[in-house]
Amino acid sequence: MRVKLLGTCLVDTFFPDAGEAVVKLLRYFGVDVVYPKDQTCCGKPPNSAGYVDEARHAARHFISVFQGDEPIVIPSGSCASMVKIHYPELFENDPVMKEKAENTARRAYELTQFLVHVLKAHESGLRAQGRITYHASCQLTRELGVREEPLLLLGSLQGSEFVHLAHADRCCGFGGTFMGKLPEVSMAIADEKAETIIRTKADTVTGCDLGCLMNIKDALKRAGSEVQVKHIAEVIAEGL
Image 1 (cartoon, rainbow, N blue to C red):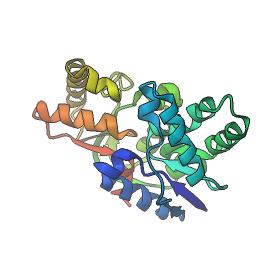
Image 2: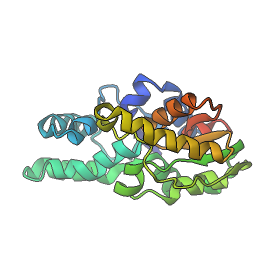
Image 3: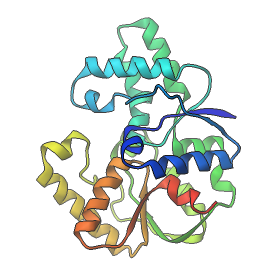
Image 4: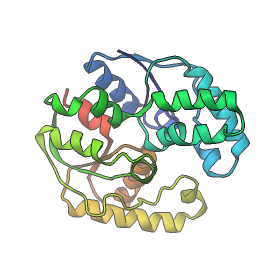
């Protein structure tokens, strides 16, 4: 099987280890991973900020770069929701582009969706270590509707202990541009999330969105915690 991988801006800029883990994980299951070199931002930030023309420009480029029949794997709930939900909306008044956007949306998978529904990774005896908890990011759960897939994967990991996080789907305070516009509120929400994570006595907190994990990592650091923060791909790939 061949797939095209969206690297995402945060992977490209701040978290290359997470991107490498995604590739390692997919290759473990025999997937041929193609990384289109001309890819750029999916357009989520401008779309969320109300710059629809700029978002539409980014979407046109994405659709062109990722054209074809292969599945598109996206290690980010927010980016995946942009492609799957908002791309067709952006071209509501352009029948030709809307058809292309809908085709792109049908082929797009958030990483855990692909691992569970296509590769059946949760049935393959994957392994991990330590005590792991999980933050359910807002757009992944509420907008994209991905709730059970990460839990299936984490609960299936042999050799580790998965502990549920209280209020796991409560916002971490990142919220994209919200963090920049209201930093004090963002930090207060993140500090509450960090306290909840610390109470689980987990060694590692994971999730599917690096923006959230970046905010959580900063909050845990402020709290003096040694809890590790890793993308779900890193948690799984480390056990291969």
